[in-house]
Length: 178
Image 1: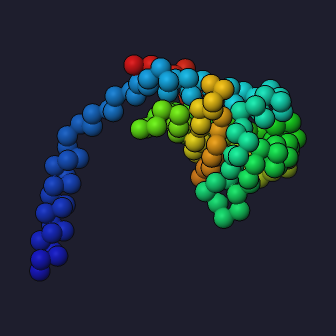
Image 2: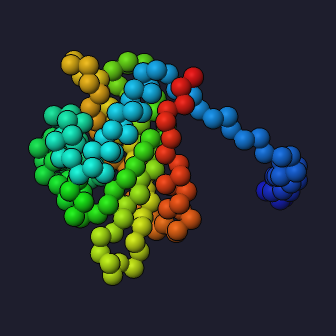
Image 3: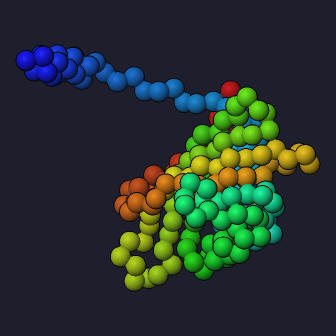
């Protein structure tokens, strides 16, 4: 009987909430330092788009771990460069991404960046040409003053429609500094 009352109460309260108009969340704003990481993340993505292996390597911390949220991560800059060679040169897949959120917590030399990533198949016979995922990168502000990615991971990719691809391509923006 109690369960029925709880369910009924939730149904009534849910309909009351549904009648109130939703208030959109305010656009986020970021600090000057967070915007510096934002720019560095975009530069990292641009290195792949430009097929610039040297610039890509300069973004990667020597002790970096990629696929950090998986059972078999890739450890170290040299291993990452080797593993990503087909991505950076564009022969394996097309990969583009950009930050949507950057935060710096209690340690001013560590930042987290996350956002969407678009994967494009190079196989003309592929059943699914585009996939979308989300990435998360942890950046370290090295002693030379350069932000380098230390940890990188993401979500499993999911199929993307033409509308999803268009929304992704329209979504890249400059850092909204507060």
